[in-house]
Image (cartoon, rainbow, N blue to C red; front, side):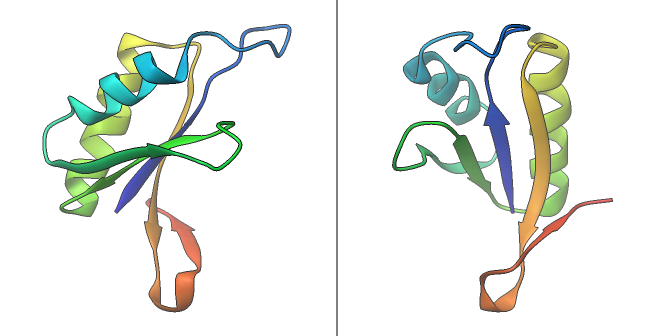
Length: 84
C-alpha cells in the first residue's frame, strides 16, 4: 500500500523541500520505504497494509493540511486504486 503527497502552496509553488516530506512519510508507523518520483514532483511511501497507509495519510493530512495526500493501493499489473 502506498500514500502519495504532492506539496504545493496556493500559488502552485513548492511548499517545502522533498527531504522534509520524505522524512515525514518515513517517520510514519509501518512505512517500509519513502521515495520520490524521478522528477521529484511526487513523494510516496510504501506501507505494510492498507490500514497503515490510510492511517499515515490521515496523520500527515492533519499535520500538514496544505499537502495533497492520498492513500492508494497498487493492484496486480501495476494499476493504482484509491482506498475507500
